[in-house]
Length: 82
Image 1: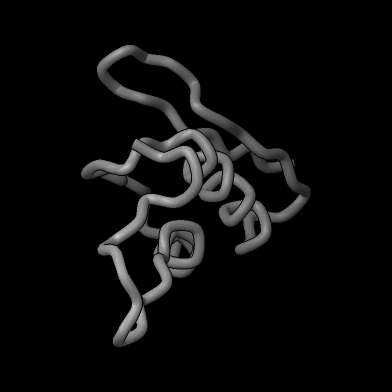
Image 2: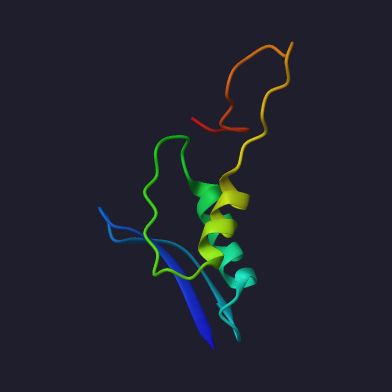
């Protein structure tokens, strides 16, 4: 059984976690999605142990749609983001 958790270092606050029988992309994606759900729109430092699944999981969780030519507005942090 694997437990993946995320922690805010400055406050030592646990941000999210997931349990899985396997240490795979599904487990890591679940934690990345939890972090994205609560993250503010500002720089974020991620530190991991080197499992290749982390890169893709965080790219999927935090990617933004590229604005199309002719659309008004700039980069959006998403609904309700600051």
